[in-house]
Image (cartoon, rainbow, N blue to C red; front, side):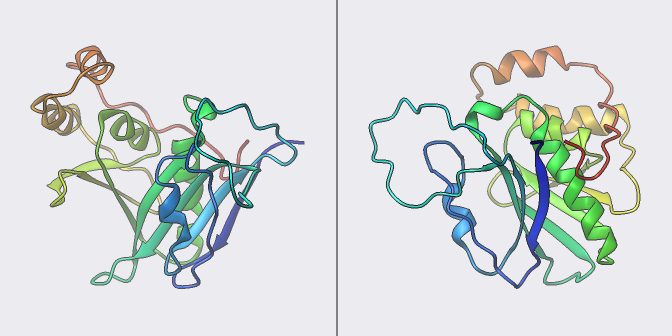
Length: 202
């Protein structure tokens, strides 16, 4: 059976997930009750072993391989903020993060949101969100995250200078490997073309 893409609910419905904190970053953020949530599920998928001696306690959402949470902007109700995107550790590198972002964009447009925003704190997320049609706004949040956005109706069209300026923000930070090598590889490059993913394309 293939992967299933689903919006579990919109803010302020507050659908929650119990993600295994050993397998997902930001797992605790998905127990909040005031955000919307979208997931990618793989029914019947086998969970790989975890090299971690912390207890596996509780009834986790075992078929989830990626999740996103989002809420409306308080000052701009037609703008949706994607707050967190997390991909199960053993499934990273498959493009699930940007594909899930594109899925949320598509569904948000159906609900008449006209703009989506997300804040990222590392160059890999910055690149992935460009692949989902987002572009850097030139703004940072108070927690040193770069704010990216895109119209719901079409991908953003960032130029090389703006794209590189965002990467330069990360270059000015004291980052180790593999971030430093990634930033060096992208030096002078054009922004990635937004991927042409169908919403829910597995």
